[in-house]
Image 1 (tube, helix red, strand yellow):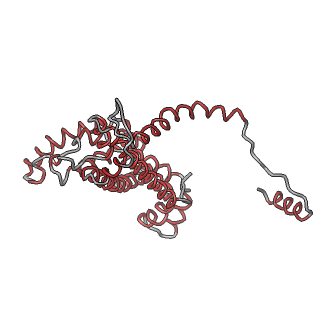
Image 2: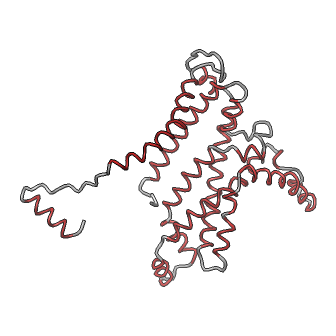
Image 3: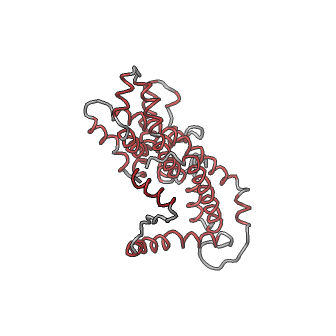
Length: 307
């Protein structure tokens, strides 16, 4: 609202005249464009979810007859050490990967927006992992961890690397974090580049004139002004990593033992072994947990949106 409009509105209120409301009416035709999307979303997401929640209160194996058993599946779920282990691994892996991805992506974004040669070509190179299938990446890194890395360990005399870390229950998770981060960094990198490029150059020029070093410009200008983009990367990253499946499947298949079995892998493997209703209860609990995490994230990051 301009100054003239504000004065006119104030005068109209003093005179007892109600100023007209400036409503942006949406043409009815626009709502018709939403119908196909709503129908597809309902049939592909909402209806299957409701059916799954319904069967989580039964003893169904996916086919044949079934009967209601109440909260039996949910009670058994919280007493199952394998399920609890999968939740522990999934959350620990997700938090570690979010931290690694955001730190590396931010540093790369700062470098790729500075005055360096071939930065356009380098940006193209760094986003290549984003377009490669996760299962293909997992198989390639599986070969590297099982063959190339032990060969390097034997050559260099490093005992720790002389066997595949994928077979070590204490370090297999680290391999999964590395590979998942390698694929996820390009997405966060592009978001950070967009955030850094949105900062006016005058701010950096004024800081340089005042004698601010590059480190001070990074910590006191760049990072505070792209906090909204950090929030976006954290929300999107945590959502994607909580649903991790293909990379873990290709790297360790949940092993050694069940040390790297994610919640998604537990649900999928259970569905193929006749635990349909039990895993539907697991999926329902996981859905509620993810919703709670999303609400907490949105409440924390409210007011820091980059859009």
